[in-house]
Image 1 (cartoon, rainbow, N blue to C red):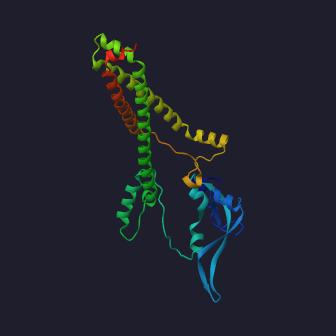
Image 2: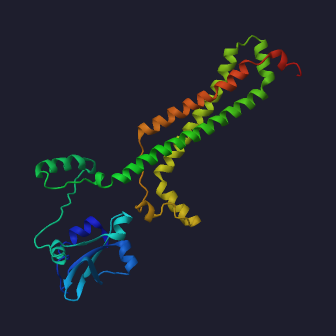
Length: 292
């Protein structure tokens, strides 16, 4: 049992017929668990391509021996994929010496598209070349849409926080009515009063943004540990592998995304200070001190 790449390298010879005269098969960890299979167990494979006999179509069946159990880290693969040697597959599917496809592993996964284009140009139109991004095009489209939706939700959360800043500043203006009136009677300009409250609100926005950014980064860097803690304490599977196809939570911190979020958040916080600051600057000193 181990990682897929290690097993494919170490067990390649075992995939060929061994002492038990059965061809070997590598099977995913979750699939082996569901079928109750262990190392060196025998398993029967049934092909949807049957054989024509006088009694009708008979399913093509063959026994294999489990020579390895792999864990790829992708739930979709670990529950559905198995590997057998090319000669065994050719005999089982009666392909002769034909190979239906070749999978190329590249050093840099993000260069797969360019490499696929080079292979396509060299082989010509007689062969179909598909890279992993094109094979999972629907998944990536869904992820892009999800990212846009999450960004919109984030903006809405910031707007709610902005209304909180507005409420706080309005309450401060109401509490400091007498102080504002005294400042105005001493010669303070409306612009100065407005500036005081704008700086106050902007300071609240900057502190909140910095604390939120630091908290978000700490949570992102420790997301796997947090998820495991939640699962252990509350018994809740935060990221079910049968839905998200992964056994660990990946994360990537992008400086440009963090910068954009900080700028947008501080800008909205600044705009939120305008109305209560303007309200404070329009305060009539005589009316404010009338009942003091």
